[in-house]
Image (tube, rainbow, N blue to C red; front, top):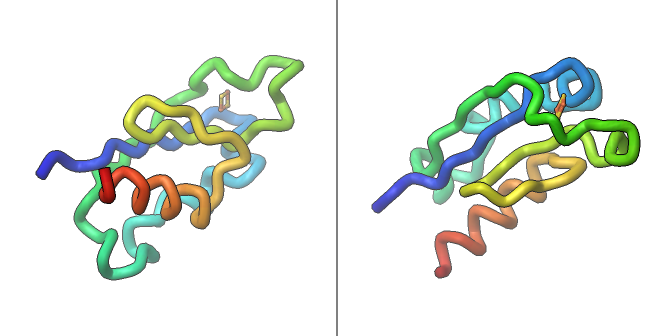
Length: 84
Ligand code: FES
């Protein structure tokens, strides 16, 4: 099965607003999700311009942007993708 691609923005804005807490997410995932994702840290995704600052930290999951990303949102998206 193809792994889910999780791209975590580690640009300054996202990093300061919490993406640093997501870098270790693989180790904190529920057991049924572990090993099912490829996790990549990327520089600024260019989504944090003035009007969208409030959306940080940004994460892309299989190309879909998740705003104000946190563990719960990432897990929910992963479960949804695994059910497809
Ligand atoms: S720092 Fe994350 S989108 Fe710019």
